[in-house]
Amino acid sequence: IQDLHFECLPHPPYSLDLAPSDYHMFGPLKEAMGGKKFRSDEEIQQAVHEWLRRQPQEFFSRGIHTLRKRWRACIERNGDYVEK
Image (cartoon, rainbow, N blue to C red; front, side):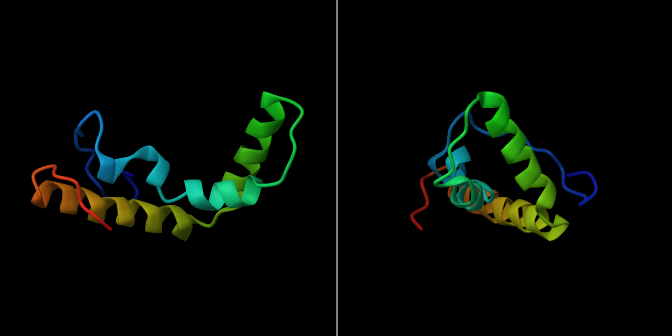
């Protein structure tokens, strides 16, 4: 976040527009892990860490920029839910 010159802001404990399940990486991560069988929590953690390491920097930068747009929409609507 610091490398991209963003400022960390406090956020509400829950917002439908900023739900963690909607974050940029969860969809692609779910797709990458789909259909695989793991024998242990450690094996899952290793697979997720490997997947994260393979993602280019632009992947994470794009996700942070998307989150910034969602933050802005939430702020402009005073926290009211934003339909997609």
